[in-house]
Each structure stands twice: as C-alpha cells, then as structure tokens.
Amino acid sequence: MSNALIVIDVQNDFCPGGALAVPEGDQIVPGINALMAEFDTVVLTQDWHPDGHSSFASSHDGKSSYELIDMLYGPQVLWPDHCVQGSKGSALHADLNVTRANVIIRKGTNSAIDSYSAFFENDHKTPTGLDGYLKSLGVSEITMVGLATDFCVQFSALDAARLGFKVSVRQDLCRAIDLDGSLANAENAMDEAGISRI
Ligand code: VGL
Ligand code: ZN
Image (cartoon, rainbow, N blue to C red; front, side, top):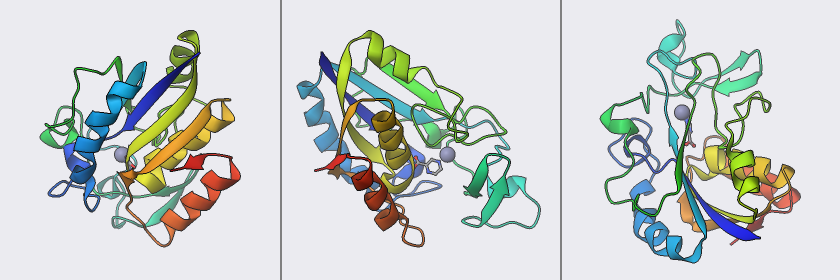
C-alpha cells in the first residue's frame, strides 16, 4: 500500500494576475514542492478547457461571470474564460516542481461539461482514469493540496473518499474562491465524508 499527493490546478489563471485569480493562490507553491518528498506518487492536475467552453459566461448570451445556471447535469457556476488549452494562463505555475510528477491529469476538456474533480466530470460519472491509475499502483491514502479549496479540491476530495481512499486535505496548502459561503459549505461536506482537514 502506498500514498499519493494530488496537486490540484496550480495554474497561472488561478494565481494573482490570472483570469480567475484565487487570493494568495501562488503562496502555496513552496510548501507543496517541499511536501512532494513525502509521497510515493505525485499527481498534478491541470484545468484544460477548449475555447468557448460551456462553463465560460462568455459562451452564454446575456450571462455574467459567477451567475449560476442549470445544465443537464445540474447547477453550474459561470466563470470568466480561464485555462484555455495552451494559453499562458493554463500553464502550471512556473515555480511548481514538475520533475517529481508521475502523471499530469488534464480535465475539463469536453466543451459540454465542466470537470472540477480530478476523478470525474461534473456528471459524477465520466471518469478521468485517475481512480484506476492510483488503485493499480496500490495507493490507499491520498493527500490533496491546491486550488481552489471550495471547488476543484473539494470535488476531488469527495470523489476520492467515495472511491474508498483515505483522504486528507492540507488546508494550509490550499486557497479558496469563497463565493456565497462556498468555503464553509465545502468544509461541512468534507467533514461529513470523513475527510481529515489538516
Ligand atoms: C476551478 C472553477 C473553474 C478550480 C476550475 O480549479 O477550482 N474552479 N474551473
Ligand atoms: Zn475551469
């Protein structure tokens, strides 16, 4: 049995100056780099949207960023255009240590559906392949860090717990967007799922 560190979306667009900047998003990078040495497997994720992705407010006439709409798979927050495949904003933060990464999972590549979680798209059904990858390596314990606590980190942590992994979230190495109480809601949901918040 082994452990894995999952580093969620530490990309330029989620850092100060980016299109969907998370306050202090860049401050977690040195701590994440230092933590990598404690893990058998390091996974990085990258939000990786095609131009005109359906999670972008600009793809919906008359809608503004941060409005909520109903999609076929459930409610969806509309975001500013961000992490467009190959753009500077989609690149991993320049100081993130990528040499220790065993694999980089790209998500949100299907135009019709958003994908917050590293494991499933937002329909909670379409897999990214990460579950099989980790289980085939004998990984049983996962630690999550990255951006943003209340969206991609939360969704990834909840899916990991549901898939049977023992999950911890290092909150000091995460930062939140915090829209309308989303951080408090995420913390409650993670507590209910038996995830340790450290
Ligand atoms: C994220 C909103 C949209 C995240 C990604 O990484 O938390 N949030 N796309
Ligand atoms: Zn996104």
